[in-house]
Length: 407
Image 1 (cartoon, rainbow, N blue to C red):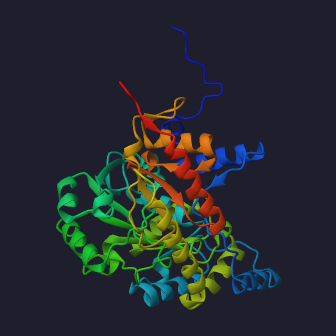
Image 2: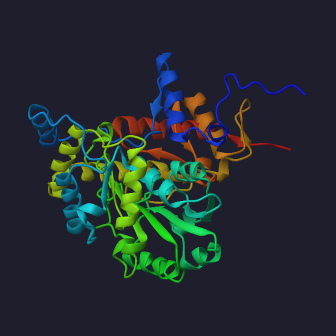
Image 3: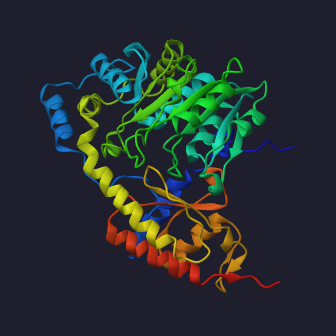
Protein backbone atom coordinates (compact mmCIF):
# COMPACT_ATOMS: atom_id res chain seq x y z
CA UNK A 1 0.00 0.00 0.00
CA UNK A 2 1.43 3.34 -1.08
CA UNK A 3 2.13 5.77 1.76
CA UNK A 4 0.20 9.04 1.54
CA UNK A 5 2.40 11.96 0.52
CA UNK A 6 3.19 14.44 3.27
CA UNK A 7 4.22 17.14 0.79
CA UNK A 8 2.08 20.24 1.17
CA UNK A 9 0.06 18.63 3.94
CA UNK A 10 -0.90 20.79 6.93
CA UNK A 11 -1.31 19.40 10.43
CA UNK A 12 -4.39 17.46 11.49
CA UNK A 13 -5.09 20.18 14.06
CA UNK A 14 -5.24 22.89 11.41
CA UNK A 15 -7.53 20.71 9.30
CA UNK A 16 -9.99 20.62 12.21
CA UNK A 17 -10.08 24.40 12.63
CA UNK A 18 -12.54 26.65 10.85
CA UNK A 19 -11.62 30.04 9.46
CA UNK A 20 -13.05 32.81 11.61
CA UNK A 21 -16.52 33.46 10.17
CA UNK A 22 -16.27 37.20 10.76
CA UNK A 23 -12.83 37.45 9.17
CA UNK A 24 -13.91 35.22 6.26
CA UNK A 25 -16.84 37.49 5.45
CA UNK A 26 -14.61 40.56 5.76
CA UNK A 27 -12.16 38.95 3.35
CA UNK A 28 -14.88 38.20 0.79
CA UNK A 29 -16.19 41.74 1.16
CA UNK A 30 -12.75 43.19 0.43
CA UNK A 31 -12.42 40.96 -2.63
CA UNK A 32 -15.74 42.20 -4.03
CA UNK A 33 -14.88 45.81 -3.21
CA UNK A 34 -11.56 45.44 -5.03
CA UNK A 35 -13.60 44.44 -8.10
CA UNK A 36 -15.48 47.71 -7.89
CA UNK A 37 -18.61 46.33 -6.23
CA UNK A 38 -20.40 48.76 -3.84
CA UNK A 39 -20.18 46.57 -0.74
CA UNK A 40 -21.64 47.70 2.59
CA UNK A 41 -19.66 45.74 5.16
CA UNK A 42 -21.35 45.10 8.52
CA UNK A 43 -19.36 41.95 9.26
CA UNK A 44 -16.57 43.20 11.54
CA UNK A 45 -16.91 44.54 15.06
CA UNK A 46 -14.57 47.50 14.82
CA UNK A 47 -15.34 51.02 16.06
CA UNK A 48 -15.16 53.55 13.23
CA UNK A 49 -13.68 56.13 15.61
CA UNK A 50 -10.02 57.08 15.88
CA UNK A 51 -7.97 56.44 19.00
CA UNK A 52 -8.28 59.48 21.35
CA UNK A 53 -5.42 61.96 21.14
CA UNK A 54 -4.35 61.61 24.79
CA UNK A 55 -3.67 57.93 24.16
CA UNK A 56 -1.70 58.63 21.00
CA UNK A 57 0.29 61.25 22.91
CA UNK A 58 1.23 58.62 25.51
CA UNK A 59 2.47 56.36 22.72
CA UNK A 60 4.56 59.15 21.19
CA UNK A 61 6.06 59.92 24.58
CA UNK A 62 6.98 56.25 25.02
CA UNK A 63 8.78 56.28 21.68
CA UNK A 64 10.62 59.49 22.53
CA UNK A 65 11.67 58.00 25.86
CA UNK A 66 12.94 54.87 24.09
CA UNK A 67 10.55 52.47 25.80
CA UNK A 68 11.24 50.15 22.89
CA UNK A 69 12.97 47.17 24.47
CA UNK A 70 11.57 43.85 25.64
CA UNK A 71 9.08 44.02 28.46
CA UNK A 72 8.46 41.25 31.01
CA UNK A 73 6.35 38.48 29.49
CA UNK A 74 3.32 39.43 31.59
CA UNK A 75 3.73 43.16 30.89
CA UNK A 76 5.33 46.16 32.58
CA UNK A 77 4.60 46.35 36.30
CA UNK A 78 3.25 49.90 35.99
CA UNK A 79 0.78 48.73 33.32
CA UNK A 80 -0.31 45.76 35.42
CA UNK A 81 -0.80 48.14 38.33
CA UNK A 82 -3.02 50.27 36.09
CA UNK A 83 -5.07 47.20 35.17
CA UNK A 84 -5.33 46.20 38.83
CA UNK A 85 -6.63 49.65 39.75
CA UNK A 86 -9.03 49.64 36.80
CA UNK A 87 -10.48 46.30 37.96
CA UNK A 88 -11.05 47.77 41.44
CA UNK A 89 -12.49 51.06 40.17
CA UNK A 90 -14.80 49.79 37.45
CA UNK A 91 -15.57 46.19 38.41
CA UNK A 92 -15.09 45.73 42.14
CA UNK A 93 -12.50 43.02 41.46
CA UNK A 94 -9.38 42.65 43.59
CA UNK A 95 -6.65 41.25 41.37
CA UNK A 96 -3.10 42.15 42.40
CA UNK A 97 -0.58 43.21 39.72
CA UNK A 98 0.96 39.71 40.02
CA UNK A 99 -2.42 38.28 39.01
CA UNK A 100 -2.53 40.33 35.78
CA UNK A 101 -1.18 39.26 32.39
CA UNK A 102 -0.95 41.75 29.51
CA UNK A 103 -1.31 40.13 26.09
CA UNK A 104 -1.45 40.91 22.40
CA UNK A 105 -5.20 41.40 22.36
CA UNK A 106 -8.04 39.93 24.40
CA UNK A 107 -8.09 37.00 21.99
CA UNK A 108 -4.61 35.99 23.15
CA UNK A 109 -5.74 36.37 26.76
CA UNK A 110 -8.58 33.96 26.04
CA UNK A 111 -6.24 31.56 24.26
CA UNK A 112 -3.73 31.66 27.12
CA UNK A 113 -6.39 30.85 29.70
CA UNK A 114 -8.01 28.07 27.68
CA UNK A 115 -4.69 26.43 26.81
CA UNK A 116 -3.51 26.74 30.40
CA UNK A 117 -6.61 25.06 31.86
CA UNK A 118 -8.17 22.64 29.38
CA UNK A 119 -6.97 19.06 28.97
CA UNK A 120 -7.80 16.57 26.26
CA UNK A 121 -11.42 15.51 26.72
CA UNK A 122 -12.38 18.26 29.17
CA UNK A 123 -15.79 19.77 28.60
CA UNK A 124 -16.20 23.53 28.21
CA UNK A 125 -19.69 24.96 28.60
CA UNK A 126 -20.66 27.93 26.44
CA UNK A 127 -23.94 29.80 26.50
CA UNK A 128 -25.02 29.92 22.87
CA UNK A 129 -24.76 32.23 20.95
CA UNK A 130 -21.07 32.84 21.71
CA UNK A 131 -18.15 34.56 20.03
CA UNK A 132 -16.82 32.53 17.11
CA UNK A 133 -13.28 31.95 18.45
CA UNK A 134 -14.30 30.35 21.76
CA UNK A 135 -15.13 26.96 20.26
CA UNK A 136 -12.10 26.95 17.98
CA UNK A 137 -9.73 27.73 20.87
CA UNK A 138 -11.27 24.90 22.88
CA UNK A 139 -10.71 22.66 19.87
CA UNK A 140 -7.02 23.63 19.80
CA UNK A 141 -6.74 22.68 23.48
CA UNK A 142 -8.33 19.28 22.83
CA UNK A 143 -11.48 20.06 24.78
CA UNK A 144 -15.12 19.50 23.88
CA UNK A 145 -17.59 22.36 23.54
CA UNK A 146 -20.93 21.90 25.30
CA UNK A 147 -23.48 24.45 24.15
CA UNK A 148 -26.33 25.79 26.29
CA UNK A 149 -28.79 27.36 23.90
CA UNK A 150 -30.60 30.59 24.69
CA UNK A 151 -32.59 32.07 21.84
CA UNK A 152 -33.95 35.50 21.10
CA UNK A 153 -37.12 34.92 23.17
CA UNK A 154 -34.98 34.70 26.34
CA UNK A 155 -32.86 37.68 25.26
CA UNK A 156 -30.07 35.17 24.54
CA UNK A 157 -29.39 34.52 28.25
CA UNK A 158 -29.26 31.08 29.86
CA UNK A 159 -30.97 30.04 33.10
CA UNK A 160 -29.31 28.32 36.09
CA UNK A 161 -31.54 25.29 35.42
CA UNK A 162 -30.18 24.98 31.89
CA UNK A 163 -26.60 25.30 33.16
CA UNK A 164 -27.15 22.68 35.83
CA UNK A 165 -28.36 20.13 33.26
CA UNK A 166 -25.12 20.14 31.24
CA UNK A 167 -22.55 19.96 34.03
CA UNK A 168 -20.80 16.58 34.19
CA UNK A 169 -17.68 15.22 35.92
CA UNK A 170 -15.77 16.26 32.76
CA UNK A 171 -16.75 19.93 33.00
CA UNK A 172 -13.71 22.18 33.39
CA UNK A 173 -14.73 25.62 32.19
CA UNK A 174 -17.66 27.92 31.53
CA UNK A 175 -16.94 30.66 28.98
CA UNK A 176 -19.28 33.56 28.36
CA UNK A 177 -19.23 37.23 27.38
CA UNK A 178 -21.23 40.04 28.96
CA UNK A 179 -21.91 42.36 27.28
CA UNK A 180 -22.22 39.64 24.68
CA UNK A 181 -20.80 39.34 21.21
CA UNK A 182 -22.84 38.60 19.05
CA UNK A 183 -26.09 39.53 20.81
CA UNK A 184 -25.44 42.66 22.84
CA UNK A 185 -27.16 41.08 25.85
CA UNK A 186 -25.97 41.88 29.39
CA UNK A 187 -26.20 39.64 32.46
CA UNK A 188 -27.28 41.49 35.60
CA UNK A 189 -25.60 40.93 38.96
CA UNK A 190 -28.62 38.88 40.07
CA UNK A 191 -28.50 36.70 36.94
CA UNK A 192 -24.77 36.08 37.43
CA UNK A 193 -25.25 35.23 41.11
CA UNK A 194 -27.69 32.38 40.40
CA UNK A 195 -25.33 31.02 37.74
CA UNK A 196 -22.43 31.29 40.20
CA UNK A 197 -24.47 29.37 42.78
CA UNK A 198 -24.69 26.44 40.34
CA UNK A 199 -20.96 26.54 39.55
CA UNK A 200 -19.98 26.67 43.21
CA UNK A 201 -21.81 23.40 43.84
CA UNK A 202 -19.03 21.67 41.86
CA UNK A 203 -15.31 21.62 42.59
CA UNK A 204 -12.81 22.23 39.81
CA UNK A 205 -15.04 24.26 37.48
CA UNK A 206 -13.66 27.64 36.42
CA UNK A 207 -15.14 30.56 34.53
CA UNK A 208 -13.73 32.79 31.80
CA UNK A 209 -15.65 36.05 31.78
CA UNK A 210 -15.07 38.02 28.58
CA UNK A 211 -15.85 41.67 29.34
CA UNK A 212 -14.31 43.40 26.33
CA UNK A 213 -17.54 45.35 25.59
CA UNK A 214 -17.91 46.48 29.21
CA UNK A 215 -18.07 50.22 28.53
CA UNK A 216 -20.23 50.08 25.39
CA UNK A 217 -23.28 49.56 27.55
CA UNK A 218 -26.63 51.35 27.33
CA UNK A 219 -28.34 49.97 30.45
CA UNK A 220 -25.93 50.91 33.22
CA UNK A 221 -22.79 49.44 34.70
CA UNK A 222 -21.73 45.91 33.70
CA UNK A 223 -21.41 43.23 36.38
CA UNK A 224 -18.57 40.73 36.79
CA UNK A 225 -19.15 37.19 38.00
CA UNK A 226 -15.87 37.41 39.90
CA UNK A 227 -17.59 39.71 42.40
CA UNK A 228 -19.97 36.92 43.48
CA UNK A 229 -18.97 35.36 46.81
CA UNK A 230 -16.53 32.49 46.27
CA UNK A 231 -16.05 33.19 42.56
CA UNK A 232 -12.90 35.35 42.41
CA UNK A 233 -10.69 32.29 42.91
CA UNK A 234 -12.67 30.51 40.17
CA UNK A 235 -12.73 33.31 37.59
CA UNK A 236 -10.49 34.55 34.80
CA UNK A 237 -11.65 38.04 33.81
CA UNK A 238 -10.65 39.05 30.28
CA UNK A 239 -10.78 42.59 28.94
CA UNK A 240 -8.87 44.98 26.70
CA UNK A 241 -8.76 48.43 25.16
CA UNK A 242 -9.77 47.63 21.57
CA UNK A 243 -13.48 48.36 21.67
CA UNK A 244 -14.04 51.05 24.27
CA UNK A 245 -11.04 53.18 23.30
CA UNK A 246 -11.08 52.47 19.53
CA UNK A 247 -7.67 50.78 19.76
CA UNK A 248 -8.22 47.65 17.66
CA UNK A 249 -4.92 47.97 15.82
CA UNK A 250 -2.89 48.48 19.00
CA UNK A 251 -3.51 44.83 19.90
CA UNK A 252 -3.59 44.90 23.68
CA UNK A 253 -5.73 42.81 26.01
CA UNK A 254 -5.34 41.63 29.57
CA UNK A 255 -6.65 39.19 32.11
CA UNK A 256 -6.96 38.97 35.85
CA UNK A 257 -6.89 35.53 37.44
CA UNK A 258 -5.89 33.62 40.57
CA UNK A 259 -2.09 33.69 40.82
CA UNK A 260 -1.55 30.09 39.71
CA UNK A 261 -3.64 30.64 36.58
CA UNK A 262 -1.96 33.99 35.82
CA UNK A 263 1.46 32.32 36.14
CA UNK A 264 0.33 29.51 33.83
CA UNK A 265 -0.90 32.05 31.26
CA UNK A 266 2.40 33.91 31.45
CA UNK A 267 4.28 30.64 30.91
CA UNK A 268 2.12 29.89 27.87
CA UNK A 269 2.61 33.37 26.45
CA UNK A 270 6.35 33.16 27.01
CA UNK A 271 6.56 30.40 24.43
CA UNK A 272 4.41 32.16 21.84
CA UNK A 273 4.83 35.95 21.79
CA UNK A 274 6.63 36.96 25.00
CA UNK A 275 5.71 40.48 26.21
CA UNK A 276 3.40 42.50 24.00
CA UNK A 277 4.32 45.73 22.20
CA UNK A 278 5.85 48.21 24.65
CA UNK A 279 4.36 51.24 22.88
CA UNK A 280 0.90 49.71 23.01
CA UNK A 281 1.38 49.01 26.70
CA UNK A 282 2.19 52.63 27.51
CA UNK A 283 -0.66 53.91 25.35
CA UNK A 284 -3.04 51.50 27.05
CA UNK A 285 -1.84 52.62 30.48
CA UNK A 286 -3.12 56.09 29.63
CA UNK A 287 -6.47 54.64 28.55
CA UNK A 288 -6.78 52.48 31.66
CA UNK A 289 -6.03 55.36 34.01
CA UNK A 290 -8.52 57.69 32.33
CA UNK A 291 -12.00 58.30 33.65
CA UNK A 292 -14.35 56.17 31.48
CA UNK A 293 -16.38 59.37 31.03
CA UNK A 294 -13.88 60.37 28.31
CA UNK A 295 -15.60 57.96 25.92
CA UNK A 296 -19.17 58.94 26.86
CA UNK A 297 -19.71 60.78 23.58
CA UNK A 298 -18.70 57.70 21.56
CA UNK A 299 -21.06 55.51 23.59
CA UNK A 300 -23.91 57.93 22.95
CA UNK A 301 -23.22 57.76 19.22
CA UNK A 302 -23.41 53.96 19.34
CA UNK A 303 -26.70 54.14 21.22
CA UNK A 304 -28.13 56.56 18.68
CA UNK A 305 -27.08 54.23 15.87
CA UNK A 306 -28.60 51.26 17.66
CA UNK A 307 -31.92 53.02 17.97
CA UNK A 308 -31.83 54.14 14.35
CA UNK A 309 -31.10 50.65 13.02
CA UNK A 310 -33.66 49.05 15.32
CA UNK A 311 -36.36 51.40 14.03
CA UNK A 312 -35.61 50.21 10.51
CA UNK A 313 -35.20 46.50 11.22
CA UNK A 314 -38.51 46.08 13.03
CA UNK A 315 -40.37 47.20 9.90
CA UNK A 316 -38.91 44.39 7.75
CA UNK A 317 -41.47 41.57 7.40
CA UNK A 318 -40.26 38.18 8.69
CA UNK A 319 -37.29 39.53 10.60
CA UNK A 320 -37.31 38.88 14.35
CA UNK A 321 -35.29 41.46 16.29
CA UNK A 322 -34.65 42.31 19.93
CA UNK A 323 -33.17 45.55 21.29
CA UNK A 324 -29.52 44.95 22.26
CA UNK A 325 -28.47 46.33 25.63
CA UNK A 326 -24.80 46.84 24.77
CA UNK A 327 -21.93 46.31 22.29
CA UNK A 328 -22.64 47.26 18.65
CA UNK A 329 -24.40 44.27 17.11
CA UNK A 330 -27.84 43.04 16.16
CA UNK A 331 -28.32 39.29 16.17
CA UNK A 332 -31.52 38.74 14.21
CA UNK A 333 -33.63 35.60 13.93
CA UNK A 334 -34.02 34.86 10.21
CA UNK A 335 -35.73 31.46 10.35
CA UNK A 336 -38.68 32.92 8.39
CA UNK A 337 -36.38 33.01 5.36
CA UNK A 338 -35.20 29.40 5.50
CA UNK A 339 -36.31 27.18 2.61
CA UNK A 340 -36.84 30.16 0.34
CA UNK A 341 -35.52 31.21 -3.03
CA UNK A 342 -35.29 34.25 -5.26
CA UNK A 343 -35.57 31.97 -8.30
CA UNK A 344 -31.80 31.50 -8.55
CA UNK A 345 -30.39 31.00 -5.06
CA UNK A 346 -31.87 28.61 -2.49
CA UNK A 347 -31.60 29.67 1.15
CA UNK A 348 -31.69 26.80 3.67
CA UNK A 349 -29.60 28.22 6.53
CA UNK A 350 -28.44 31.51 8.02
CA UNK A 351 -25.04 31.01 6.38
CA UNK A 352 -26.82 30.61 3.03
CA UNK A 353 -28.69 33.82 3.73
CA UNK A 354 -25.48 35.71 4.55
CA UNK A 355 -23.93 34.60 1.25
CA UNK A 356 -27.13 35.43 -0.63
CA UNK A 357 -27.19 38.98 0.78
CA UNK A 358 -23.54 39.50 -0.08
CA UNK A 359 -24.02 38.41 -3.69
CA UNK A 360 -27.52 39.80 -4.26
CA UNK A 361 -27.32 43.26 -2.68
CA UNK A 362 -23.62 43.50 -1.68
CA UNK A 363 -24.42 43.53 2.04
CA UNK A 364 -21.90 41.76 4.27
CA UNK A 365 -23.37 40.10 7.37
CA UNK A 366 -22.25 37.00 9.30
CA UNK A 367 -24.24 33.75 9.42
CA UNK A 368 -25.08 32.37 12.83
CA UNK A 369 -23.68 28.85 12.66
CA UNK A 370 -20.21 29.89 13.83
CA UNK A 371 -21.78 31.67 16.82
CA UNK A 372 -23.54 28.51 17.95
CA UNK A 373 -26.99 29.68 16.87
CA UNK A 374 -27.81 28.91 13.26
CA UNK A 375 -31.18 30.67 13.46
CA UNK A 376 -29.66 34.14 13.24
CA UNK A 377 -27.36 36.49 11.36
CA UNK A 378 -25.21 39.20 12.92
CA UNK A 379 -24.71 42.75 11.75
CA UNK A 380 -22.45 45.40 13.28
CA UNK A 381 -23.62 48.99 13.53
CA UNK A 382 -20.11 50.37 14.15
CA UNK A 383 -20.27 52.55 11.06
CA UNK A 384 -21.85 55.80 9.87
CA UNK A 385 -25.58 56.52 9.87
CA UNK A 386 -25.46 56.90 6.10
CA UNK A 387 -24.00 53.41 5.69
CA UNK A 388 -26.43 51.96 8.22
CA UNK A 389 -29.43 53.46 6.42
CA UNK A 390 -28.15 51.98 3.19
CA UNK A 391 -27.60 48.61 4.87
CA UNK A 392 -31.18 48.46 6.18
CA UNK A 393 -32.43 49.42 2.72
CA UNK A 394 -30.40 46.64 1.10
CA UNK A 395 -31.44 44.10 3.72
CA UNK A 396 -35.10 44.94 3.09
CA UNK A 397 -34.61 44.65 -0.66
CA UNK A 398 -32.68 41.40 -0.52
CA UNK A 399 -35.17 39.70 1.78
CA UNK A 400 -38.14 40.90 -0.27
CA UNK A 401 -37.04 38.73 -3.21
CA UNK A 402 -37.10 35.50 -1.16
CA UNK A 403 -40.25 33.39 -1.52
CA UNK A 404 -41.08 30.00 0.02
CA UNK A 405 -40.01 27.01 -2.02
CA UNK A 406 -43.03 25.23 -3.43
CA UNK A 407 -42.69 21.45 -3.13
